[in-house]
Length: 77
Image 1 (cartoon, rainbow, N blue to C red):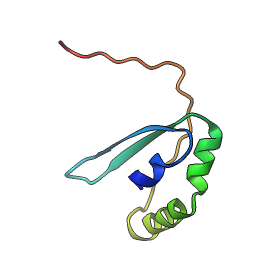
Image 2: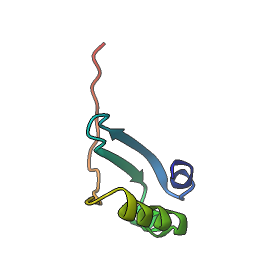
Image 3: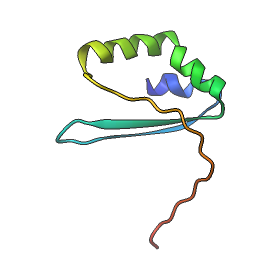
Image 4: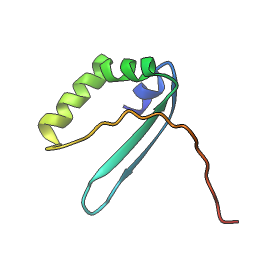
């Protein structure tokens, strides 16, 4: 899916994390527009992957579509 998501027009970046003990995880993907999000959501190969996840891996998951109004970071020197 990483190669596929990067091919979506308007893709900006994504980050994933999975807890090694519980295997719970999160992936956050950033896109330039709602149209880009829709293209990713409806991509045929992504749809197949979503269905596979529902039938083989997940008993629950959640999607959120949010707008980032401000972003900053801090790093210890």
